[in-house]
Amino acid sequence: MLSYIEKFFFYLLIFCIPFQTRKILFWNSNEFQSVSFYFTDLLIFSLFFFWFFHAFKTKKNYFNRLNAIWARKHIIDLSLVLFLIISLVSLIRADNIFLGIYKWIKLLEFIGLFWYVKNRYKEDGIFLREVKIPIVPLIFIFNAVFQSFISIFQYAYQRSAGLKILGESFLGIDIYGVAKITAENLKFIRAYGTFPHPNILATFILICLIFLFFLYIKIPNWNKKFTPYYFCNKNGAKFIKREIKKDIVPLNGIILAGIYPLLIFSLYLTFSRVVFLLWILTSILFFIWFWRYNLYKRKIKELALFFIIYNLLFIILLFPELSFRFRVSPQEQAVSLRIFYIQIASVMIFSFPILGIGLSQFPVKLSSFADIRNSWMIQPVHNIYLLMASEVGLLGLGFFLFFVICLIRNSLFKLKTNSQSVFNFSYIICVLCLLIIGLFDHFLITIQSGQLIFWLILGLSAKNG
Image (cartoon, rainbow, N blue to C red; front, side, top):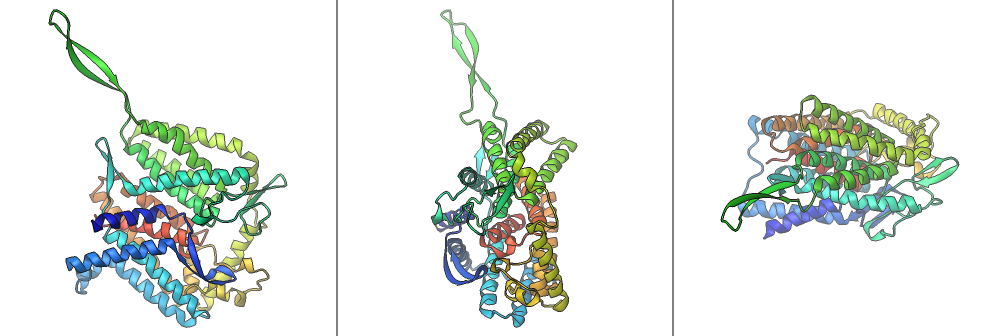
């Protein structure tokens, strides 16, 4: 019974990734120096309770004696432990020690979530005919459909959908701080869904599009079936008649004509340039790779055709906004600020190369390294690797990169030895996409929903069993 409750909490956590329902415990001028307790935190701690209760009940020893063999087997976990230790030690330089301890506890929480998924989660699925489809990607896709409807409403009416209880941001054309684009002297808000920023929504949809790609090629074709049956005439002679039996749920058609264009359109409405270009590149590489190795050719042709049709349709529909959005200039605020933060991060790394300035201290010490005139400019550098190097030093960044390299290597090795689940490959692709996005933004390690996406996908890629 407890195992079913535990699974319910885990799937509920995945479903609640986009929802920012929280209690603000302490607010200090901006999001990055404040303390909050999220509903998803409660779900994570509940999973830890079930995990520890199961370990105590079964007397399972997760930590065998330390030796060379154990170290090689658990090299991923050891590198994360060392990363945690370095992050804690870096707080000796923290100006705001309270914020640093809070952020370290949050880091421990999400690394613990990674360990939970890696060691405790056993992938369940539902059967579509003879094919077993994992539940986790299905929850992601279902949630993305829900977020897409919210996004379309936000863009169509240029305001919030009224879902404050789910943590939806308060949106409007004239509201300061809301992400907007300008086209032909008109302003348009970018789609948020219930995420705190359009770039996070775009990343979430990108992952769901990758899952949808593998779901489509994995599920069987939903064709008409001819079922023979016998009947006798008046003279007793037997005849065979074929009856057409149609499938009740044409899932392929629903994906191609319904879910696929809906997710693509919502991705367009975020106007997130990096994620959009990454999705285009990833899709093209998928088509080339599967066609090159003669895999799922029929379905790849179908997906490629609809990929071209939907993209042309949405580009024509949103051409004015897209043309202005993709005119990248060094003078553009989004670009110039990123360059500014990179320069500040470089100075911080050069000044404190080993242990950095302290975990979560980039926004705190930013004004000490540059002239900050507006409070909204107090935010981390838009690069998770530079942010780690500046806050926990090159030593901390080194352990994190070592962890990522070992994780990808082990995941590829498991994929090579056990290729039964095509979704294991999708998890690795998602990890690589997130690591690339981390070059251009910081939300994967600074914002609750971004951290949930990041560590959950890492855990799914590394999971045992």
